[in-house]
Length: 243
Ligand code: PXP
Image 1 (cartoon, protein in one colour):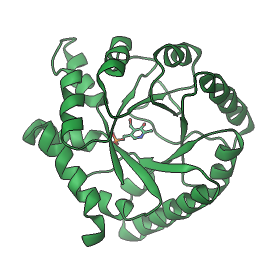
Image 2 (cartoon, rainbow, N blue to C red; image 1 turned 30 degrees about the vertical axis):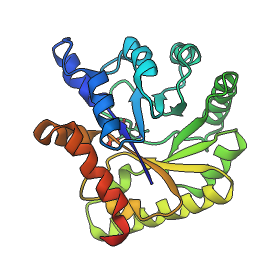
Image 3 (cartoon, helix red, strand yellow; image 1 turned 90 degrees about the vertical axis):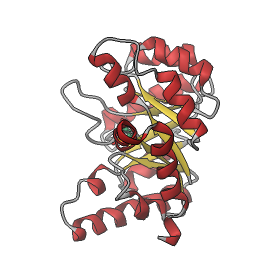
């Protein structure tokens, strides 16, 4: 199973002082050297962390796979069409939220039509599209119908579970949604809220292609460095079956 490292919060630290450090390119290169198989960045409409120039620079530098997370907004779609990342993950976005709070609700007709139109535009540049959605079997069917290549299953509820029973229940939903998506011919990623303690059960789900992990890795990197933080996570994923 692959590891995609989300480096948004390296940029969060940089933007706290509107400074040049920590350097985002260095973070991406070190993460790749430590075993990351992809680099993910979210160009938010409010530009709170990643900036337009970062997207263009990382497009040149990232040698694994640049996954651009973005909301369905005219302005950001135009940037994606210009930069042509290796992959786009469409996510919902609210200005007041601290992080992406839920998946795209493609079961709602208006959201579904809007998402379908965005996929069609991005497909004019042959960009593979992933949809960040909650672990619901019905949503997997809709993702396939509207032309997604990948889904990224939102693991936030699993990560935020307060009890073991609740966590097991959420894990079951993720497993069922993954299986359903795979049968439909979708490729399946997962992410949000995954950390060094809760990643193992998710990494045991055979049909998942990639886990996208950001906050926990960047937080650990503050203390042990980016290389160690990434390689420790990679090791946990690789050894999930033995744990
Ligand atoms: N996947 C998606 C679609 C996200 O929006 C995020 C958060 O930016 C992540 C994965 C990574 O989540 P976390 O930072 O909690 O690991």
